[in-house]
Length: 578
Ligand code: FES
Image (cartoon, rainbow, N blue to C red; front, side):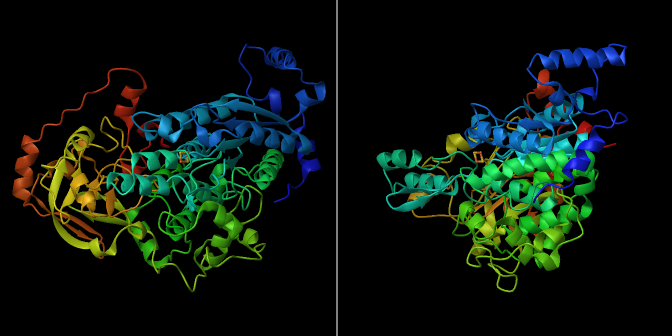
């Protein structure tokens, strides 16, 4: 992944016919030369030499924040990116954007993903830079950066935080956050005591970097590399590995090369590369959230992700990667096994190899460099972990615009099942009653959560992983069918139907489910059916009165007015191309 044409890049970028660096995108004072003079005056106050002021600028948009543990090593990564840009002949200029630390935001980070994407789009467009490095990692940051970059469409290279390293508890390997949930489930079932859960809490996330399993952050990093927006093999490298610093340096060089040889996000993110990303999402048993994010990223360039097409791809794409939450290993093991190039190499027969990447190579050319794969972790195409993809979309009268099930993380014994609905009308209702000893529930029931979708006040949190009711958990029940319009953490597992669209808050059929209704799930038929007559549903529609407090000002008002459903990536209506 060495940078190319550095000298030529510099020469072309410095041509007087091509305004670059501080001469780009001038503040308007009605006198262009004065604008340049004034800007250089103020830039000089930062101590830049004349040589630096003349250079093309590579912006570094980063999301470091005291509220983002995953990004705590960003100062070091930023220095490495700068090294790469300077060595190539450019001037690196870092700037902060909104940061979205997954566990630090209420009601949920997804609510602010589009806000961050607007920040990235507008600041890369408004500030003088010839190319930009996008430095993110935690779940929503990479999608937001790619959405913003796609809309701004200036040459951009993604760099990610890299995954956390694992730690140990009583000899057992731990990594956030599949093990967070596993131990919490043990605590709820009274299998471990308060002292032990306290000890585990201090060991689950013990280094910088993103969650250590195939959660949303890892999935999105892998998809960014698959799309071609990152240098090869830069998604899976651990946050604390020296290789990550070398990758950061290389990312700086690659970004500088884009100044003279501009490959824009619209050249890279195409219908073909998006299909490659969907294939890889299925092959890695990736996060359900990635369906929403990829839909939003592609949507910024007018490319539609169709859930029926996802189902067709799922039938012909094997799961090749044995990582938690569906398998055994962690992200650091994937890197040691050959990283994303190893996955792409095995999946080669199914990929569009002609797709362009930020380094100027095609995807196919990148794969020629793969020399070794640990097949215990990245299985051979001919010997997959499972024959079909990790995700399926379900349709039916309960989900006319689709729902998502991560079948690779679910219990096949529950795939063809009819059950009685036990309904929770909101997250508050769920919290109040789920652990009540008087809750009328059996292991064969379907737990249904309403009003947790994108149009709800809750803004589609990762609450789709409904807890097993305490009395059933104590009796040893590990999984049940659970349905909602919410999302689920990429690190979670269970027979959990998510993203039901349209959601209950926007008047979708999910709002019409009542306690005791029968619901049919058939993964084989991709079916989610509310077994209630149309006449009764029509009657319920007239009685159904939603009580949503409409926000009256600020971002919340914008969100409520513009938010789209899950099948449109939960983007804002006005951010999609005309
Ligand atoms: Fe940042 Fe999991 S909390 S990636």
